[in-house]
Length: 362
Image (cartoon, rainbow, N blue to C red):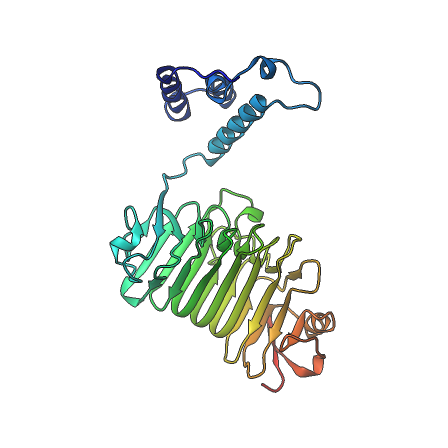
């Protein structure tokens, strides 16, 4: 049976823990050792778990202590990161960004910089609609998720104005929540940027992410501009469509998606049951990579680029050659109406440094 200290002792230890975290000057090593001492009674102790673990065996208590230590070391690595308020959209009072009642807790300020995370979890309520009237608004902190709550989808629509988010972790649409979540642009501008305090693999932009197989991330662009990584800002680890068991679908019928990261675009990089598809639907949608021709596809044949009849859209990759595109067509990674096809159905146009690919006869 685990022994717990009385509430008064627990509260005193928690206060001391906070003081060590934020107030008392000491070396990192000493802080970690002090935290181990303070947290032992909080995580529980027993005669069995108090003994030295056998080789290859980690006791539950030791696991807890190691976990707490690793969390703290992570906090040390964050240094002077700002306090992050969570701005979460629930949509209960309508779709207007300025509707305070549609935000859980304190609403963000429009046409201003907000130091905080942006979360959108509105199902079955109204989506968040960001319009010209909302001006230029920034969210700068750790996280950006459309559909972040379990069993609750999220929907963000950009019709005008300019919305910028800078995320420490991966920004995502459809995050492991067993629902379909969507991001739609019909006008305006959305900028996905990165902070520089995490490795690129942990800070990319993902349409569909996680292991919950019923989760789907959707990006629809019919107008406006989506910029993945503004030039001159810390580099994102690319644009990812589907990951692990979660599927992602991107449909372009107008507007433009600009990816400035040299990591390019990856379809379903981690194996699982998900699949990723980039669709050029009827219209003039464009995906342009300014810094790389890199496009990669995960295992299996269920992730690909699909040009649909009537599309006048373009895939534009930096320094890509016709041979690059032809190889993807022959491998079944560039298709026509969802089916493998032949290179004669497409046209290549060189506009250095970019190579353009489109349907020969829309």
